[in-house]
Figure (cartoon, rainbow, N blue to C red):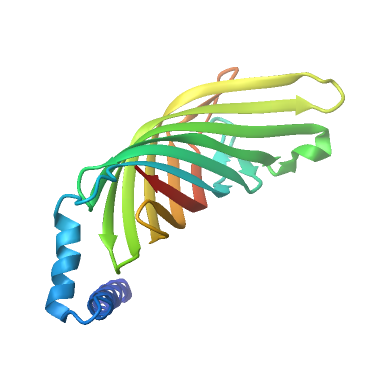
Length: 236
C-alpha cells in the first residue's frame, strides 16, 4: 500500500476502535444493564421512531466565518481576499426518526474584503464588504455516542443571496452589487443534551456557491465559506 492507503487504513481502524469504545461506555452508563442491553438501546435510538413528542425543533448557530480567496475572471488571476468574519444561522426542522431530520436554514454571513489583486483596499481609500444570506434545505443524520452526546452529519442545497458593498472614503456613497447563486453545504457537529428539550454543541459548516456576478460584466469564482459555530437546539 502507498502512503495514502496506509493513512486511510489507520483512520478506518481508529474510527472503528473509537466506535466500539463509545458503545462500551454507553453500556456502562445504563445503571447496571449489560453491554448487550446498552447496544440495544443505542441501536433502537438510531433506527426507531422517536418515543417523545419532540419532533419539531428550532436551531440557532453563531460563530467564526472564514472565506477562501476568490479569483476574478478575465483579470489575469487577480484575487479577492477576505478578513475573518461572522456567521449567524437559524433553522426550523423536523425529526422523522431519532436518526434522521430535515430542516430549512437561513441566516447571514459577513466578511470584509481585505485585498484585491494583492493591494489592500484601505490603502487606496476604499472599503468593501460581502454579505451572504443562505436559504438552504438540509438533511441531518444523527448518531448517538452516549446517553447525552450526539454526533451528526448533514448536507444541504439551496440558494445564496450575496451583496458586495463598496464605499469610497469621504464620498458617502455606497455601491451595492447583488446576485443570487446556487448554494451547497456540508455540516458536521457534536451536541450535548442539556435536558430533554435543549441541546448545546459545536458545529462546522462549509458553504459553497457557483460563480458570482460582480457587475459591469465582471465575474468571479464562487465563494467558499468555512464556519466554526456554537450550536443551540430547542425541541418542541
